Image (cartoon, rainbow, N blue to C red):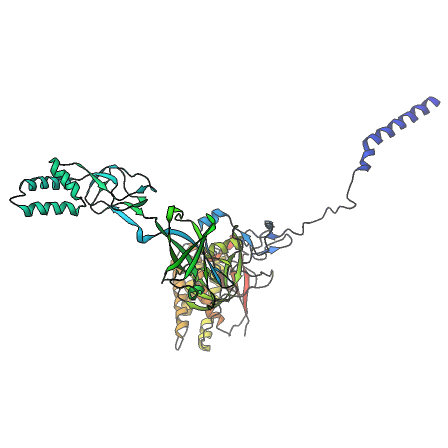
Length: 573
């Protein structure tokens, strides 16, 4: 018995020791005092893959199409809720262009302008072929190469020149008897830019030169080489563009509100990053009389002497002009291409950072229109950068990322959006009474498209068309008559088309006109709902009428049966 007790005690001690080894250190590990396994990331938002404007703080169904919401991409660090970023590739493909509004900086009576060094076009020249032929050899083969007047630049084989040389040698033998002929032949060669020495050498040698040398008639830098060895050229065809860089232009862009601040002959101080410790003095020699309608700028330039070729075309420069005692026009004008209209609002897209493609929508107040531009009364300040080309692409990117866009300020889930068509037309009570008789056939047409039944759609379109033929149009306004004609044509097309997609396309046009007419009436026997699908009409959105509040989409049928929302309600009388 005692022996068994010893065994039991020993087993107990071994078990306690093993338990300490396994679990003893677990108590020393750090655990949080409490852990909520149901914890949810409150920063996560949920959106609809078909309607990215929908943003909710928790998962669920899309209130427009009923699809399951998916997690939205988290925002980029450093961006406000309304800002979004585009890739450089997307910007390049869409050809997105921006300008800085208001223009250069004006501080303490000093106007600062940015510009570039350009070739002095007054000193540029084109070296041409003065006779036709085949280029046998080029002695100037690279752009940027220095060329001096009188330098050998090419050798050309010219059948015309060979014949002219033979005429010269023949006329030389008749010089005493027919001096007029001899002089005429020499003058002909001079017209081809042959010098007296060249003509005299031909006479002295008595031989015809097949490959005739071409000498430069101007000095400068080869800006463009326009031919290659073996090319055939015609008389007068350009061989090289020669740029004389002994003087260059400093060309600056000044903005529309700065026209009154600059004038010809005004002193301008020019600096460049290439020579930060040097200032170059010049005078404004030209002010462009034509404003660039895309950038709303005009060109201001000064001529600089380019000793030792210190200025290179393309080099960035900055100009400083004293504008003390001059009245400064602070009006801001921007190109019409920068503005997106949404009916009640006018918006532009800002590029908020100069070094990153980050954009944000801004509402603006427009003033007077001047051809291709608008005056901005409110919403922009001088120095801000806006998109002038590709604004619709930027807006599409905003919509895809669920940001504020031209189609959406702040979407409130569950509240109907206002209808886009607000035109009112005066129609008589008699017209209303007759027209409303066609609506039952319309609702049957709508239901046929919901059911994707092409044959029934044609049938009920014909029924509605027959009802409309009985509508009295006497005394009807021209605008209402135009809508009636458009509705009739749309119904005729639905009847003629057998393809369901074509019928739905013409149903879009039908509803656009029908909505305006129906909203101008007030004699309904029952409530009518105006509903809209943002995906219909090639993603432009399209409306339809319904007697029921429940969404049944006629543009997509069972594919997207519940896609849409009620945007307006017409009460019965």
